[in-house]
Image (cartoon, rainbow, N blue to C red; front, side, top):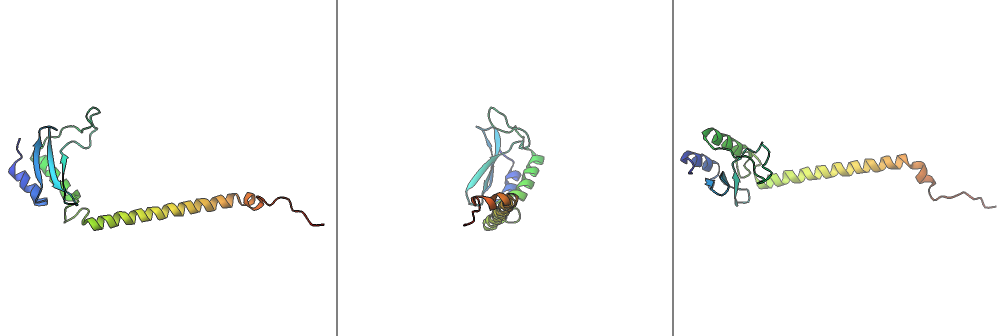
Length: 140
C-alpha cells in the first residue's frame, strides 16, 4: 500500500524529513517524524483510546483515510515536539519548564515534611522535654 501523495505533502509541511509508509510486518500505517534531538522516530497509527491486545500489546488497527489523516495532522500540529510553531517549543524551553516544575515539587515536599516534623514536635513536646532528664535530685 502506498500513501496518497497529498498525505505525504501535508506531513512534510510539518516536518521536511517526515514520511508515511505502510509497515507490512506490523500491519499498520507508520508515521516517521524527526524528534527534537534530530533523530527520526516512528509511531504506528492505531486506536490509542482503546485497550491493548493482551497477546500482542498492540492497540487495535486503525484505518487511515482522508478524515483520519486530518485528525493525525491536527494532533501532530498540537503535540509534535519538533514543531517550531507551537506545542513544547524549543527543547531548552521544555527542559527549563520541567526543571522548574521539579524544583517547585521538591520545595512543596520539603515544606510538607517540615510541617509534619513541627506537628510531631508539638504533639510530643512533653515526652521530648522529660526524656532522659531522670529524677531531679537535690543536693543535700
